[in-house]
Length: 107
Image (cartoon, rainbow, N blue to C red; front, side, top):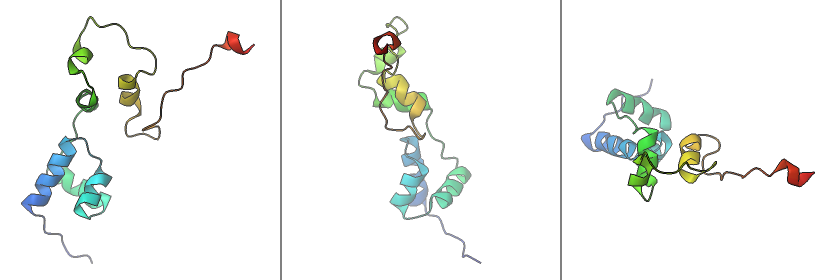
């Protein structure tokens, strides 16, 4: 049977800080030299919640005010902000949006 892990305040604060910045459980595990599942379990016990996706995208945006402006023009399909919101932490993470070709041009 494995021995119980003795958690330190430093490790707990690292988990909370990295999670608040939007780091993945795997990245936190690498930083602490622990398995992803060990870090997930500890994070749940200390309530280390990830920020909302909107907060992550807003933090990465150059102009944060432009996101919240209700009078801004509509964003085009595949815009960087909306595309990241849809694809972060999925298989498509880091891929670029491919603009569809006009079907009439292909005929």
